[in-house]
Structures are given as structure tokens and as C-alpha cells.
Amino acid sequence: MISRSLFTALTFLFIVTGCTNQGTTKSKSEKQTKKSAVKVPVFNADSAYSYVDKQVAFGPRVPNTKAHDECASYLAGELKRFGADVIVQDALVTAFDGKDLKAKNIIGQYNKEKKKHVLLFAHWDSRPFADHDPDPKNRNTPIPGANDGASGVGVLLEMARQINKAGIGIGVDIIFFDAEDYGTPDHLNLPYKPDTWCLGTQYWCKHPHVEDYTARYGILLDMVGAPNAVFYKELYSKEFAPDLVDRVWNTAADLGYLSYFSFEDGGQIIDDHVYVARERHIPSIDIIQHEPMSDSNFNEFWHTLKDDMDNIDKSTLKAVGQTLLTIIYSEK
Image 1 (cartoon, one colour):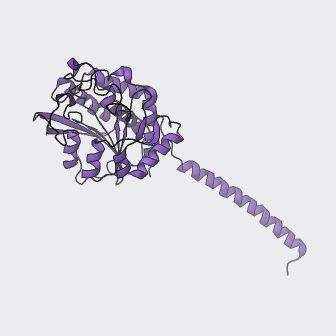
Image 2 (cartoon, rainbow, N blue to C red):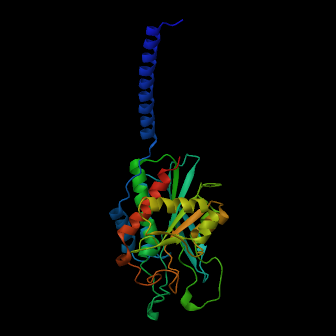
Image 3 (cartoon, rainbow, N blue to C red):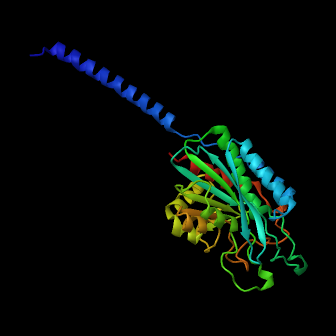
């Protein structure tokens, strides 16, 4: 039988020990939380803007031209500088008019030994025809392609720079696809011919840089640099990867970018992600500026000579880049 004084002493000891253990448990929990919290790099919009500007400075990046070759070397060199294992995939593809195009898919691999990968991609070529220019005299002239092409690549180059600085725990593949924008021009009123767009992507789907390549998901960036751009939920994306669409748009909203990422549905756009999803069976989405009320369904300078650096906005680049960095750094 325990005496009253001994019981009191033991009770006091139990209370003290219990309080001490609670404090220790809380301390360990806090340490674990801090340890498990992932620090997301800060996307530098000035840097991304400079990468867009550099591409445009080469001139139109149309296959079979000097500017195209020079820009390809630049992009591969930047990915190497940012620590990626780089593959330049030469692809001979056929345009809508039967012309052979010497295309180059530029691939940067991070942590290629990892089993789990995510795929980020954009097209780097520019449209050889300003087929929506208000001046008919310009419609056979190549566009500068600042937003339509260079903006997505600029965002991904800055992401590559940040991955190189901070490291990342998963495999990340960045692909700049070629010959996306060589599709049948609208101003010539030619008969419809399927699959004249996304030629570099179609080639890669049949000849991936890694045998039986797959990824958790793919995210395409197309026209992500215009002032006050709005990215609606593209319908093929909702079909292929609805959970990923929700995750990206919710993340953007949490970061304060709701004015860029609208929760409304957009159009159904055949873009590189469609081929990646259908042919490589990688659930993929498209972050693309869509203007459903316009005649073209895109912005007013789409496929015109006004697609230049005057229509690139750092705030838009920031919204897209910071959202994507947050997405990939939350992967485990």
C-alpha cells in the first residue's frame, strides 16, 4: 500500500515528467516539420525576360535558317550551363508543303537516374508566316515569336537555373520542341491536312530520348508572357489530367496569381501536350493564353509581326514560373 506522501511525490513526478515529455515531443515535431518543409526557389522574372529577349535577338527561329541554328546552340549551351545533361535530337520532319525541315529537339535532364520524373516543355521555333497580320503584305513574313515560343522557353530556362542552384529530389526533364509552329497557314486557304503542327513533338513521341520514356505528368507552356494574360483551363488538359489542372490552378491562386489563372474553362486546343498525352500516355496539360472572345481565339498580336518584346511582361512570366516551381518542388 502506497503512503499518502509517497503517492503525492509520485504524482508530482508523473506530472513533471509528463510535461517534460510533452515539451520534448513538441520540439521534435517542430524540428521534423522544419526538416520536411520544402524551400521553393524564388523565380527571377528579370532573368526569364532576358532569356526571352536573347532568343528574339537571333531573329525568327524558323527551321533551315541561320538564326534557327544559332538559337539551338544557345539553348543547348544554357541548359548545360545550368547543370543539365543535354541531348540535341536531330529530326528530319516534313512540313505541310512537302518541305524537309531540319528540326532540333533540345532536351535537358536533371537527376536522370531517378525513377520518378516530371516533364516540362515548350516549343522554341517561331512561326514562318504572319498569317494573321492586319497587313496582307506581311503575311508571308516570319514573326518575331516573343510570346509565341520564346516566353515558355524563357520561363523554363529560369526554372533550370533555379534547379541547378537549389537541387531537387526528383527527375526533371525539360524539352524545347521544334517545328511546332510550321502548321498550314490560314491566309493561303489550303485544304485541311491533319497533324501539320507540333512536328518536333510528334517525332519525339515516336523516338523518345530514353527508351520507353514516361513521366508522372507533363506541363506545356505556350504563350505565357503577354501583359495581363489570362490562362483558362484548357479542355484537353482537363480530359488528360484533371487533378493536375486543379492542382496548378489552386497553387496559382494560393500564391496570389488568380488574376492570371482563371477557374473558367477555355477552348480545346491541339498543342504539343495532346501528342504527348495520346502517344506517350503521359497525362499532360497546357498553360496557354486563350482569348475566347477574339476572332482568332488568341491575343491580338498572335501570328503577327507585333509578337515582339513590347508584348512581354515580367509579371506574367513571374506568375507562371513561380507557380511551376512551387508545383515541382512539392513532389516527393
